[in-house]
Amino acid sequence: MSEQQRPVVVIGAGPVGLAAAAHLADRGLRPLVLEAGPVAAAAVREWGHVRLFSPWSEVVDAVAEKLLAPTGWSRPAPDTCPTGREWAEQYLQPLADVLGEERVRYGATVTGVARAGRDRVVDAERELQPFAVQVRYADGREERITARAVLDASGTWGTPGPVGGNGLPALGEEAAADRIVHRVPDLLDPSVRARYAGRRTAVIGSGASAFTALAALASLAGTGEGAGTHAVWVLRRGLSGSTFGGGEADQLPARGALGLAAKAAVDDGHADAVTGFRAEAVERDRDGRLVLVAEDGRRLRPVDEVIALTGMRPDLSFLSEIRLRLDERLQAPVELAPLIDPNQHSCGTVYPHGHRELAHPERDFYVVGMKSYGRAPTFLALTGYEQVRSVAAALAGDTDSADRVELVLPETGVCGGAGLFETPEPDSADGDCCGATGPQPVELGARPTSGGC
Image 1 (cartoon, rainbow, N blue to C red):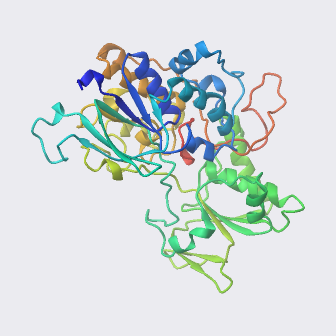
Image 2 (tube, rainbow, N blue to C red):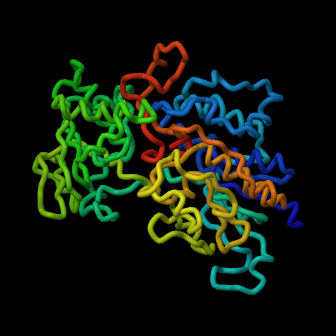
Image 3 (cartoon, rainbow, N blue to C red):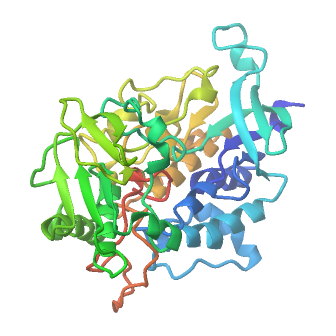
């Protein structure tokens, strides 16, 4: 098989992976998307109960929309914000269906990527060799696919940060896994609701996901069935004027409202804040409840459940034979890292970037989407779409287009992603889903999919 006949393998059928396939196909290249889940956007569906900050106008890729148009597909009302489930069912799955079975495979877990006949040590004729992509299918079969290029758009959903304050699991954390979750719970699900109603829950984290969980638990506490529900908000840092975000001054009203809702949960007595607490161990008391122990020896009162919202990180285990050049802190490409450093940037201030910032020593290998940000906490869907547009152009030999920035972000950024829960659209004259006064979404960086910040 000639190089031109070999596919460009895309790992992951999420928003950015499917957009990559659309751009590759539009360039006359042959995409092959390998998705570990049984359907498109399997990770997005796992937070399908939450609503995006971003409206439909900002979560649909333009080339993907062009590919869908002949089927009669039309974008939902552009000013409304979809839930994760709506995003997956109304856009991402139809896009995967249009790409077809020849271009998208489900139940296909990539277990390794290498150069054919070369481990990472060997230099000789390395760049002349195609990629070898090792795949394990849901039925147990294995296959090795030869590819001309590889785009890793697998995201970070499956690798949440631990309870432990030093980046390692706390002592006893794994043994307590039955009482620990790493996502905002869907309290509209009766079985999930019963798990937290009337109980004491520790919420670990300082981002918008933690705000969302606090607001949700406070809301549950205000119901008859939720009487006695209480949260312990565990922060690794201290409280300050910026702890709850920008409030009414936030350029993104929904994000500001979410911080205010978290503050209200504390002020109204539904949550207690514990600051400067870096967990060292998770122990059980005589009743089986969990006791968090800090590095400085402090012990919290027992809790029934723990919601650990401590960020995500990239899974690099199946890339051990690929030559990567990653920033030592963020685990993002070294050229991209300074642009997304969370100490300097928010989602709206990241400069659009493309193939050059995403390049690694391994030619024609790219990490795109949320995973390209490594441990940086925010990501934009539109930024991901621009990434794959540029990479597809580069692989097609159109360097001028690949180098050209074709993305203009709204002035306030596009903070979409894992929001609160399935709620009715607010009654506003302009249909602005992000203008509600109550708690709404949570930034995607705190949740691991690539729908927005």
